[in-house]
Length: 128
Image 1 (tube, rainbow, N blue to C red):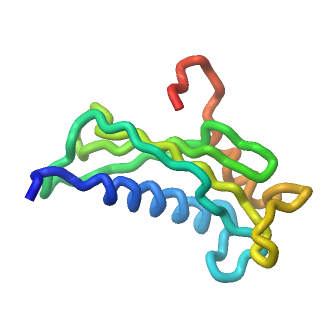
Image 2 (image 1 turned 120 degrees about the horizontal axis):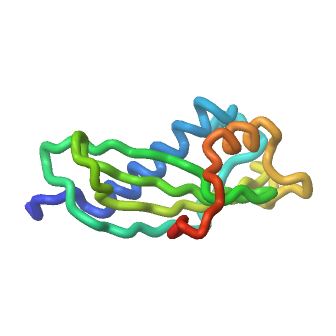
């Protein structure tokens, strides 16, 4: 045992927090929506490890919102510790389920409204 949370678990957390937000706040129905998001990019920067049995806490925001794409920033913290343990970037492109291609009008209005709620103010401070 390596005494730390494996990198694959961070990616699982990123995917889980993003999709939970989309379902609860953006009207996504994973099996029924006309559009769904495809991950076209992801990466992580690790700053410190989280070891079992510590509890991970995850924060989500949108750094960039395009017509059919969205760039998320996800921070992973250890519960009761102020310093961030990892920061991930995750990019979705929303495509029409039937064609696998983005639509000319982009993502649905309901999706856009939900994502705008967590859109970060653009500054030179954003690292991702």
